[in-house]
Image (tube, rainbow, N blue to C red; front, top):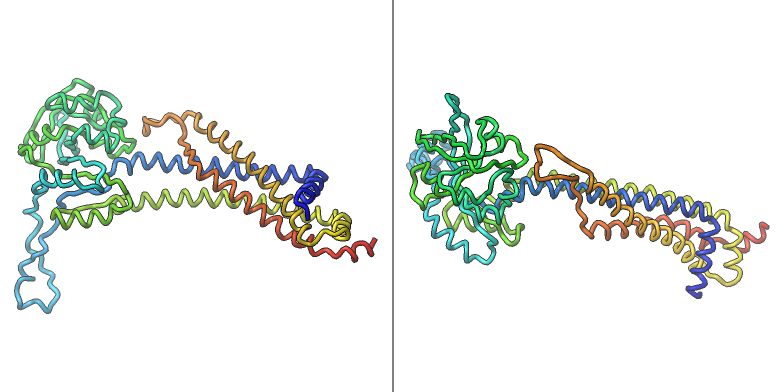
Amino acid sequence: MNIKLIADIAKSLLLARWRQSLVAAIGVTFSITMFIALLGFMNGLNDLLDGLILNRTPHVRLFNEIKPNPNQPINLTSDFQDGHNFIQSIKSSGVRLEIHNGGAILEALKVDPRVLGISPKISSPVLYNSGTIDITGVVSGIDVIAESALFFFKDYVREGAPLDLKNVSNSIILGKGVAEKLLAEIGDVVQVTTSKGDRLPLKVVGTFQSGIADFDKIQSFASIATVQKLLGKPNTYITDIQIKLKDLNTAPVVAKEYARLFQADAEDIQTANSQFETGSSIRSLISYAVGIVLLVVAGFGIYNILNMMIYEKMDTIAILKATGFSGSDVRKIFLGIALTIGLLGGLMGLVLGFSLSLIIDQVPFNTAALPTIKTYPINYNPKFYLIGITFSLITTYLAGFFPARKASKIDPVIIIRGK
């Protein structure tokens, strides 16, 4: 049968009940609108949390972990090899926090084609001295340029300039919580004491706020040279090597390889943030589930409308079949009606979903915990829009399939005889 003729008949039937068709299209539009807005917002939230945690976490971290000596004396004697030994006499007192031969490791990593960038680091527990009070904290010695390029360090410096750590000797950037406890402002000098009792006055050149309050209450940053001076260590001393890879998914394999090659402990980003990634996946799953439920509900509306249309248009269907239309042609007519509703409703839903996302993106969101965020986060990934229109067509097709099949099986003789 002629496709244009089938399309004209479907259009006529659709317009004959335009109010009900409009209601069905609005249901699809509402579903797609909420699907796009909800998915964009939830993934924007995931991106925000990724920025707080994952973007500041190296893909692979090399360090020396404090742990007991695995070669316990009792295991070295043949007298007890057949038993289970509980005696652990050698503790972890001789562990060396420094990464041995760190300079050579850095050079080797620079020529590894899998590595995007590296940033050496020194972590050390300290005491911030405030009069007679000592505040426990941690100072991190960093390469400011590498840290800003790989881990967005400069984005979290709220006051002062990050490069002052490199340009000003004996300088420090305090976490916001530490600065508030010490009543310290830019230009002040704070006393920092190591666990061995060494003390060094450091000039405050900035404040840092990550958005994680517990972190900002203890953390501060200085240049690698300043922390080496504070600890009384040589200029080759580093405790961590932070590595960013070109392919994040290779981190577990690369970490194991580096641990074996460089004789150091290695931790990959998936292991370090497994719980966090699980939370992001669950939020995305909930968004998809809610969107699909909305589309299914809209599909039931289309199903009911087409069923009613078939019931009311029995005579029309009988005449069509009596004049030469096959059951396949009738099925195409009603599937065309369903897909038209789904396509028009879906396209309007995409436009309104994008518009609603733009509105949400402009709503002010000011919180002291997240100083870098000014509005609610939205992700405009085109993938969400493609998924939305695809689900719209699939849902409406399924909603129209069963009524269309029912219409295709109507016997015109029975209908006409009944009249």
